[in-house]
Length: 412
Image (tube, rainbow, N blue to C red; front, side, top):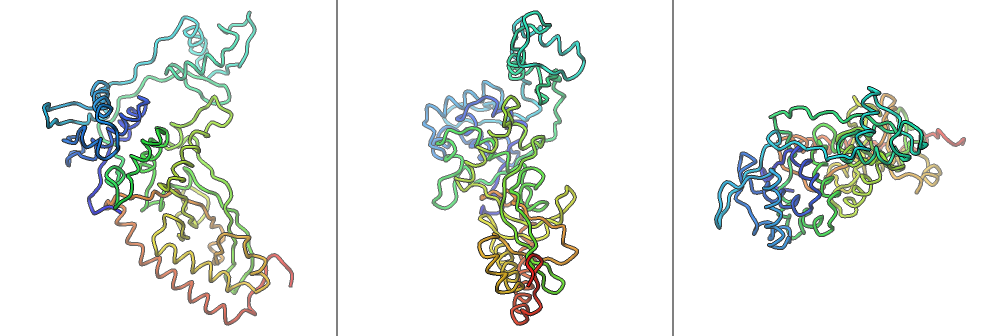
């Protein structure tokens, strides 16, 4: 955890433009410069030496990275000499992307889609005497997507790329803990780890996850963005409670959400594979994890019902999940317990009005910026402790009256 106020920010749109350069060292250097900014989130005296110290980028490469940032218009040098000063350019002042030049054959394909006036199906192969300018029009269209002239609308449909709209002057901040650059305790900073891995996709996703995560609203990344699914099965009843068993299933992502969309490859049979590969790498590094939660229902408008624990959970969340699981074991008969042993990762007793609840693993980052919003979320710890106490009382009551437990699956 960071000390209060020990965080910094980068504009999501500037970060996206930076990642489009395809330079790991430039991305790392930008994050270090941003970490050293003053209260305006733009002016920084951090430079080559700081980049080398905190990320391990050799001095000559750090110098080249800063020169690249300046050349691309992402950073301005406002003071030279041995103590330079830099200014991180606002996203709305960045130079817009210029579509790459195209050949006469590519221009002909663009004209066909433009004349259609709508998203157009492009076949993978075509005859020589067809209206298509080449025998492999789909491959040509994919190249035009990469050059910024067409959009891949899925299922082999392509449309014209729209001209970029004027960008709002209002920043779209990604709030980041200082520890991802400067480290926490004796741990190696995450930015340095990802630089050594030379995985720019994982670095971009790591930073983007901080924009997607909201602890006060969703206890992590919202479940309609990316999540780990759990199966749900009724095991038994005790009084008004039904004991449900939950087991982890597969991960799922929403392709049109801002977090996932930049990583999609619509020309692939598995468009989201790049996203999931980068996410799996971040999970292996211990920088993010799925944290199980019960939510009221699988809808956009539902709220978190109970935290269940997990690697990134705080003590009170883990205690609540443990107490609920213990209560679930106490509320089923001995022979049901033997049947359930090892079959379910979590047991949870719920009341009838909570019957639509589902368990999902919410992505949560290991390092947290100690912002006011996150402090508000932390104030719920006493509430979780109280919920854990209630489940402990329920477990004690159930243990003394097992004859009232019944099965919803197996006849006695």
